[in-house]
Length: 177
Length: 403
Image 1 (cartoon, each protein chain N blue to C red):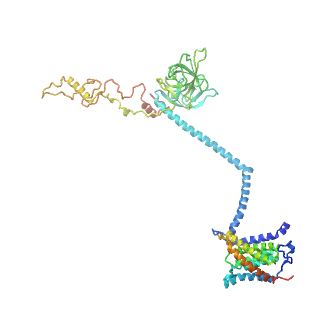
Image 2: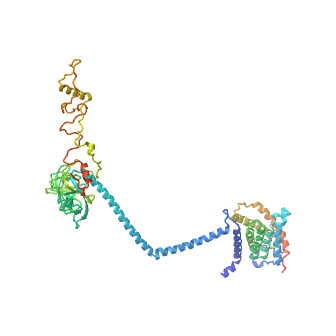
Image 3: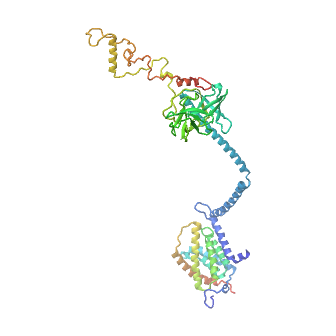
């Protein structure tokens, strides 16, 4: 659902439409995304590159147009990912909290129903997520890892493409006004 | 505050959530030294505050202790002042002990070397009066001190006894205005009268303007006053002036006997005149080894060593044989073989062979009667120092060196 005049930037926050979701959607979709990330790659190794929980966070953040909702969703999803990983709790949590907050902030200014915007936001926030995670790794765990920009860009593009499709599917779960 | 939180509630919530997760991370993560970050952060956060609080507390307590409640400081200050005073007194006492020991040693050396009969004494009091130059010493008539005796130190004359009491004596110093003594200069032998002025310096009166006296010249006692024996150092000339139309020079003399104090002095009980030395005396006393004991110098009655013969050994033998031949009317070279040879073992009379007379039969030179052996101690009117030391060691309570 795009705005009729085809603008990407909104003149004011009031122009933005707040999407509402049922509670089970807010609960089941992130949970399904997490399960997908930890379970599907067991059978399909090539799907390991997908950051479905991140895409879900970005989607809910930009669609709900609420920074608090975005950061809460990001924090919860991130902590859930941490719980299932061998990393200390908070690594994904902090990164996805920041992604959720900034995604909501950006989504308030943009026409988030536009496919290109969704592609762009998914691409950018994947990079932002990787960057924050890399910083936390270095700062908190002292891991001297290099930030592989090329790989990150490729993965960001792939996730963005998948994200556009995912977002289109999730649009079906929105409550109608 | 509430409006502030409402305005920035989104960022506030973000920060809270991030902080909460950071805390969660810090609880789990450890650093290289296996210390959890939460502990490090807590300590890092708390330490500056604790340091600040402790600094404030310490500063406040110190301020109160050092500036407000000064009763301890005052008492401590009093205590330290008393301690410093006691230490100063102790230092002065020890310095005095050291000086006394040095002076005593110098006096002992001087007493052992001077031919005069002396008595050691210590200053015990000074006479009242700002311009008075009279002191009291701890030797009196019971020790043989009499009025008019000279008082000296190893450096020079000090004064004379003006009153002798049984246990103490009054000594008028050379600087006293009423003091006078006969003096003589070292170089020119100029005679004059030393007079005190009540100042550290004295003057030499009655030196004619024609006489030559130089600055830096030494004056010695002349012995003319019948108080000070001749030859004791008096002082150094510091200034010489010749006033217009005056008959006498004005000579200012710095007395050397009182330069180092008069705490320890010697009273000359029986003076011996000495020659005026050719060179000024050294300022510092010179340590002298003790004299050779009588046993080493030769027992009483022992024959002194003979004068060594002049010439070679052949000359000595020739002289000896000639004397023997003369004594036996023997002419060397005339006796036929088988005739009786001269007796070379006869004892020749003393002086028969002249000054280098060897002892008959021993080859040792016999002493010449009446001749003074050069190696013997000089026979002066004074006994050797060893005798005086022995007398002192014998227990003379007065410490008088006896002749």
